[in-house]
Amino acid sequence: MATKKELSEGAQKALGFIKEGCETAAEIKSKGFQVYPAHLNVLVTREYVTSRDVRLVCPTCGCKRKVKAYTITKKGIEFEG
Ligand SMILES: [Zn+2]
Image 1 (cartoon, rainbow, N blue to C red):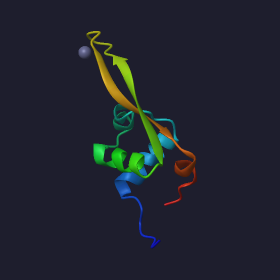
Image 2 (image 1 turned 90 degrees about the horizontal axis):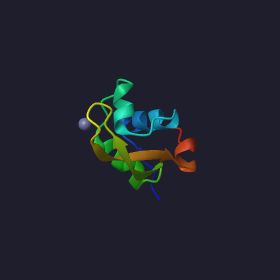
Image 3 (image 1 turned 45 degrees about the vertical axis):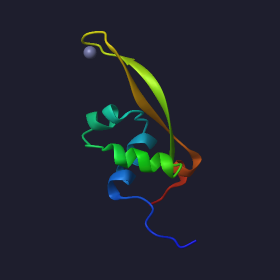
Image 4 (image 1 turned 60 degrees about the horizontal axis):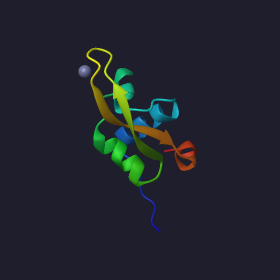
């Protein structure tokens, strides 16, 4: 299989944050990186991370919402860009 650059810069950056322990897009954004769903979707599609639905309770009003939480895979840990 031909090799090409597997991940965009944004996706690589998102992967770096997940590697450091960020779980959700909101956590990544809180670190100052404007992550887009496309960055995270490509990481899931290419099996650098897995995603699961988690329910968060809003600290302000107590409403509940479902968000995606991401966990790095072995392939993600070994990714070197
Ligand atoms: Zn709320």
